[in-house]
Length: 88
Image (cartoon, rainbow, N blue to C red; front, top):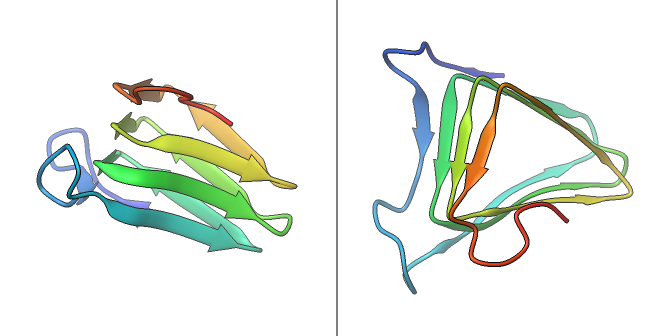
């Protein structure tokens, strides 16, 4: 669980957009919950091997959210500026 607050979200970022993007976050099995989080400038946020990603009151910026034989649950979450497929 990565849990911030509306005033102080947990931030996962490279610090800039464009070509200097990190690979992102991969959840391989199990469950990951991001509450009041910001995930920015990554290639993807992926759930694989029956994993579950829960994004609650969060923002995903310049990143694709992908589920491969898995589940992604978005609650009050924005996925913006993904420049292609926001959700796969």
